[in-house]
Length: 267
Image (cartoon, rainbow, N blue to C red; front, top):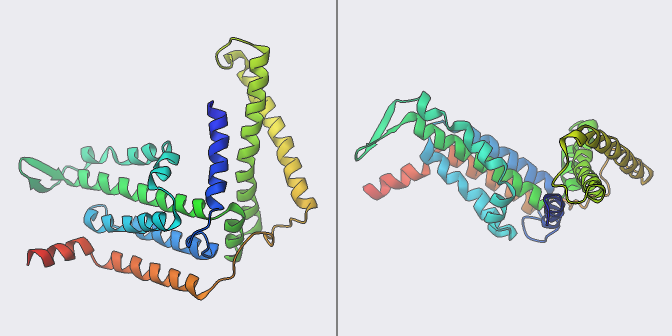
């Protein structure tokens, strides 16, 4: 399978994941969106030296991955391109912050080392929570949840069409690449002299297909509202889920649970 076919397959896999049935998938999309935003805000709010307090936040995505029936390794595979970029953000911290915090034998742990690991964990946890939201909620349900929060219709429609446009663009790239290979048999890749015309044709063809897609949506009654989205009614279980997660996040942020448990064990 070439890279274009693999990208199209992975895009369809995300839609298939969102269509699964589990307790997490059946939660109201607005509740999942609020909890995800609250989780990311809580993770980012930790101090750059608060490594022990931040570690406990991994429980939320891990527990929900297990409940939703989605392997954690699938998350890291899907995010294999983004994760190294996020982890690379803090690589300069050990060189900028050389203040020693503690010693382990002959090894001195500096503030830059701790802040680097903490920053990497913040990025990983935030990406895991975002992936979990997308993998358990369809794009239509997510857009419907945004409209319930009174996010401007133009922004929500732009998000929806951008997501749909990715599939359209990949389809056009696959068609044009196949046509180029038939005209230039035996040539590896696309010659540099054809890059300009190839990108220009790709833009024009994708714009035409995207316009057709939008017109078909308008003919079927789309006016910026997502009445067709499969959004369940908000129940007491959904409200309880939001309140329980909010209480857990506040507790994890206010109390350093690993340090507290460590002090109890030492005593």
